[in-house]
Length: 158
Image 1 (cartoon, rainbow, N blue to C red):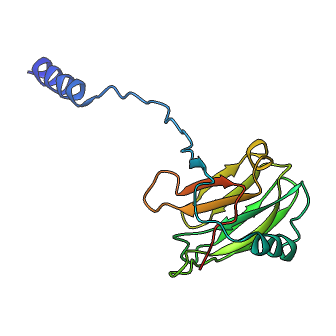
Image 2: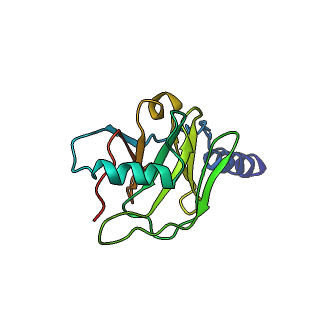
């Protein structure tokens, strides 16, 4: 009787035991959408020059980062390894799509960090050196919520 009880308890214990497999979670950073585009309605040269002067971005080592659509007041930080260019709560204008214009140093990689989604995008210095304007749009629901467009034209924001 004791043997049967022992075998029964042992078999129940073995049935309840489960081999567990643990796999290392893969953490792949989602990359933002990137485009290189000069095919859009551009602002007149006088407006482009005035914007560059107002932002003090006329030199070859400066560029302009423009936050456009779908910014809804989230805490956004824009920085490089050496300098913080912007920290704020940009809100996109529903009429023209413009949220903010920021002068940046195009000789270093620039990081855009959204404190709400805890996601970031990196603007590579190798790309920003070639283009004067970098447009950043938010894509809600995407793995990386940023879309980056490089251009040498200032878009017309009416």
